[in-house]
Image (cartoon, rainbow, N blue to C red; front, side):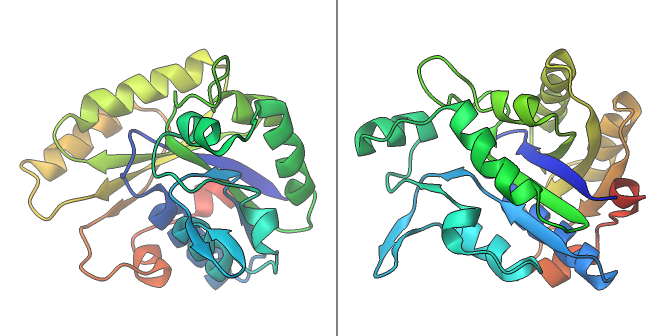
Length: 227
């Protein structure tokens, strides 16, 4: 049976895309067909082909389903700021219903695992009235939470998990992702988060000097997601 998940983070710059790509690579190793969507992305660069986002391009390179860039990242915004502000500056109207319709097109593809990656953390505004968390609610997707292991991560992880539960969605799993080389009491912090969350830990990814989906996949296990 095809499985699909929404990937969120405890904050911005916690490695959502790196972990999502690592999960895709881990699934690819098992011979599974994979797809990914990053429905909205700010901080895109202008290219001869149009605006392109580095995170969306990484997902495109890693997943096994051959999708066009516009299918993976339909809303590409140039300003490297919060999505709702970037959309305002670009004169683009974005709403959750629109994004949900776009995502459903990819979710209907015949693959084993599809990941929908969010932007920033769980409560990122999408427009003046909606939060991006409305998207996984509309799609009914379980959540994968990426925890950036740094000072304050326990609070951020538990608050994010509480918000996900309050929205009526299941936390399918979480990943401890080291975003720096030397976090004090790293193992103790991971153990504390594990003690509070019922969802399985899908992996503990150390700080890696050279990031690649294949290298990250070595520290992840996707069995709880696809079993």
